[in-house]
Amino acid sequence: MNRVSPKVLALLAGLTLIWGTSWTLFRIALDALPPWTFRTGVMVVASVLLGVLVHLRGESFAVPRGRWPALIAASILNLGYWNIASALAVLYLPSGHASVLTYTMPLWVALLGFALFGQRLCGRLMAAIAIGALAVAALMAPNFASYANAPWGLFWALSAAAGWALGTFVVKRTDWQGMGLSLTFWQVILCLPPMVVGTYLVDGVPQHWPSPAILLVMVYAGAVPMAFGTLIWFALVKALPAQVAALSTITVPIVAVLSGIVVLHEPLSLLQAVAVASTMISLWLALVPPRGVV
Figure 1 (cartoon, one colour):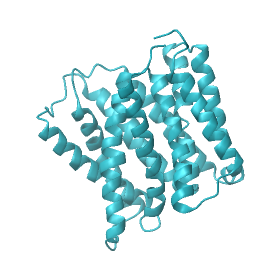
Figure 2 (cartoon, helix red, strand yellow):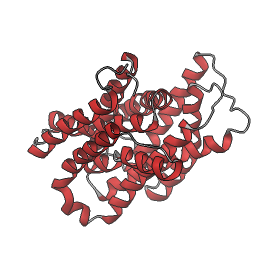
Figure 3 (cartoon, one colour):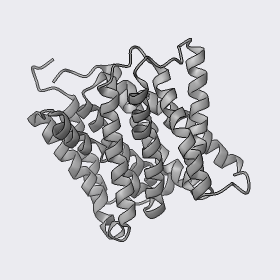
C-alpha cells in the first residue's frame, strides 16, 4: 500500500466536509420542496456551473469515440439513479437515516470488486472495511424499528449505494482519453432529462416559487456539493484504488450526523460517538501505510 499524498488527503477532507454538511441542508430544503423538485433544481444549477467551468478552462466538450456507452452508464449509475433512488429513500426514511444507508457504498465496492472483477483484498483493507461496516451499523442501530416499517426506504437507499459502487468501477476501468471536467459535465447533463420527467410525474408542476432562502440553499447545493463535490470525487477515483476511494466516503454520514447535532441540535448518542471513532480507525487503516512502507 503506497502512501497517500497530502493533496489527496486534502481532497478527501474537502469532500467529506462538502458532502457531509449537504445532508443537513437537504433536510432544511425538504421542509419547503418535494425531494424530486429539489434534486432536479440542484442538477440544473450544477450543469450550468460545470458548463461554464469547462468553457473557461478551454477544455473540449467532445466525447472520445467509443466512450458514449460507458459515459451513459456512468451517468445513470453515479448520478441519475443515485439521485432518484436517494430521493425516493427520503420519502420513506428520515434524510439522516437515508444518508447512512446510501453511504454503505464502500461495502458494495468491495463485494462487487471481488465478485465481478476478482479483486483481492489485503488484510489491512479488509479490516478497514469491517470496522467501517461497524461504524455504519452503529449509526443504523437506533433506527432499526423505522427501517423495518419502511422496506421500500431500505430498498431505494441500498440500491442507490450499489448503483454508485458499480458506477465507480465504470469510471475507474474506462480510458477516458484525457477527458477532464467535461466527464463530470456530461454525466450531469445526461441524467437531467429523466430527473425532469420524474419531477413532473411525482411532484407535478410547482405552484409557487420557493423562498429566497430555499433558492439559496438550492444554488449552493448545486454549485458546491453537486458540482465541485462530484469533481473532487472523480479526481479521487482516478487517484486511488477503487476500494480505498470508496472507503473514504464513510466519513460523510459521520459529518452529516455531527452537522445535524450542531445545526439542528440533535443529541449525540454513545453509538454515534463509537461510529466516529470507528470511522477514524477505518480510514487510518485504509490510507496510512504500515510502518516502513512508503
